[in-house]
Length: 163
Image (cartoon, rainbow, N blue to C red; front, side):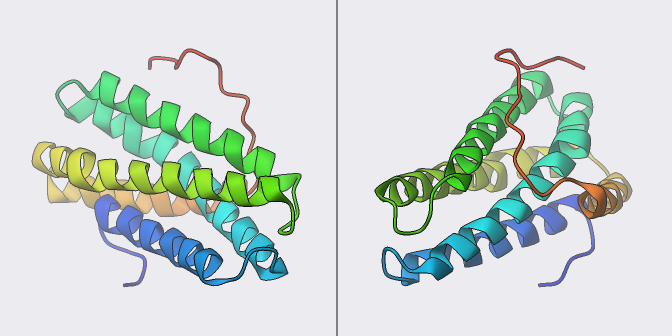
């Protein structure tokens, strides 16, 4: 599936791309240097994806979905956890025991977040928004990903701001 379409299609495509990197990491033996390369590529995709979600998706959730503030806050907290793990991962090579622990934790956190979004958040957003609105959000998310940073910056405050 290529990129394009509404925001949900766009973000599900991103999720699939990240899962491909995770699958490659899991298929390689511990210590293989390619695991670090795949982790770096996954990090770049995750950071761009997270920035775009935080800028546009969660604002739309707050505006259109019942109990949207609480839902968006939970998602942003998940992002902050994952971003800290990605930052910690930068300091370790594929042969480090810490690398294996951190990449395992990252994959678990991200997979849980993806499942929650796809099973709960996205259906609520689809029910609350018109197709035109979802398509416009998709365009905004694609533009945001083009200019988003690719390195984690876990400077998130302990309390999530409300917009």
